[in-house]
Length: 216
Ligand code: E4P
Image (cartoon, rainbow, N blue to C red; front, side, top):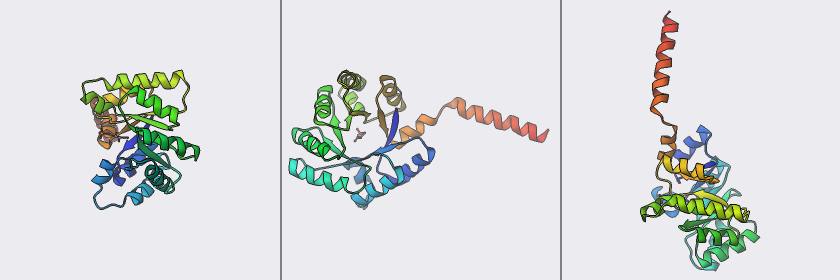
């Protein structure tokens, strides 16, 4: 399973790229708004240079022609840009048109397997079920992810499934068990994935023992 970073913060992205574990980035209007004063297109350009992999940038228009206009503009920033479009009828019409032009779309705000099926039919390169937000409603986000993986497999869609709205490392583990293509994780969750108390204790012990070797 690939790991994308779910952030618009350039410092976080630089650090995670250096760790060698992420292959893409997803942003959304909320994440962009956290980078106060920064220019949207500039941030996306910078992230693309750093990551050299798929970088999702979201449109805010809801009318077909405006979505298309915005999407083409975002796609022209860098060849790594993937245009993020909410799963609405107009949004999927745009996905269909854009896929014909070679512009990749990440269909977002997906909360059901049927929405994912429609996105795949429209030619989405990626589909993003929001696991954490589904959990918040009392439904199992992982069940929705599992259904989506089954549908993509049944019909051999080329759409890749991104487990999104990830809240903790257990979400990442379950997404990997289910076979999601990608999990997009916030920086704090990525850092938590490294940690295990036995690793820390093991390093301490090795260093202490090595000290004895040096001191004789
Ligand atoms: C990524 O594609 C989504 O926009 C993001 O994971 C949503 O996460 P949230 O539910 O924590 O806002």
